[in-house]
Length: 498
Image 1 (cartoon, rainbow, N blue to C red):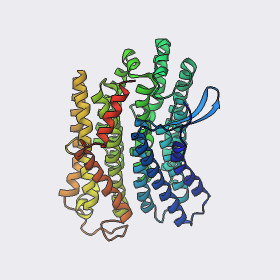
Image 2: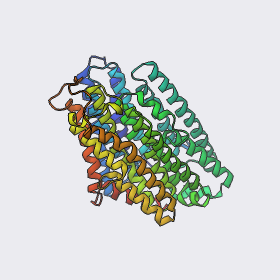
Image 3: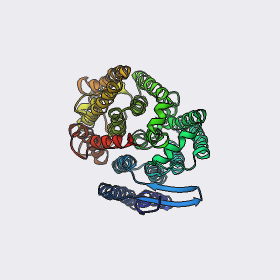
Image 4: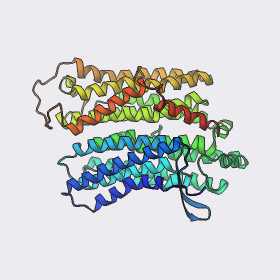
């Protein structure tokens, strides 16, 4: 594996350098900071689009820096990594626009946007990692770069949430480190996508393989918010709305889910995972997490906390799909990386808009909010229908393929889990929609905290409308070549050939 291109490195630099430069700016240098933010975000989208076009032409993109004879920093573009990197870059651009509007007039914006850029650098690094060691480095970098965002407000509650976040994620990182080191000892350097590496694990004892698999799974399960490792996520909702959106749609939780996909397919291989019966415990924990998160969401009046427990539930669809053998279920799991991201970020944008415009943080305060904020709540409603699994929104496509895969594999109990989950999704989301559109406002005249020609400021409104439209388009145009579904199907088929 030799260096064939500097483009993977440039993709990382496009957000790393702006982040470091922003740290050097003064707080009042708003225009320059905004330029660096937007330049980095647009450059990353452009570079990934360039690499995507080249990948479709059959070009290879690898960057290797040898640290020691058996230790390399490796970046590699494959279809799965490019899929995740594309999601990260597009949603980072949208969230950057939202954050600029959201934090207008706020404190510590220089620090916020610096670590915001470093956070997406870590997410992109995870997507483009060529081996297990590089993946681990960026995985831990993500923990460190996200912590300042969680504690951004500086309140006692924020500091406590940050402390909890660090306990969970550093603990998970330690367990992951033990698994990665153990894997390196018994099998040498593990490069993603190399079948001969997977074949070398066959000679390792079953006991060692089992211990290493579940050590790594536990380390990834913290960020993936799999029960009982999910406790940090609802507490972290004290962070500003752009951070919550980033945590739930692009960065931390999605990195954990993406890591589980890599673990099963690119590290151990689906053959060994099935043979050693590793997938059954993963399926059981994922299914329980889906139902547990939904039940907890039912009892939350805090808007963002209800969304947080929804994420705990929805994210485990990915783990469940990976744990069901078959191309169809894997397609549903992989496409849900994107579908969950665009639907969930829509929801957090909507929650942020309502809080910033009217000061409402509780669901019980949302009576008639749809009349005051029709575009925001229209986008939110589309995302709700998707989360429930109603056609033609993106979430329906994910659940349809997960269900088809379960039937194909003879795992009919999974279909029952999906149906129960959809019923619970409806039970905790539809009351919000009903309040917003059909209940009379408790107060007819409510002072707006944010001004704007429309229902709120343009930089807050445009992102939620865009992601709401994307949530619908991903379902309506799922059959079109180049859609997230078509790409996910290609990825699943290739992974099953490894």
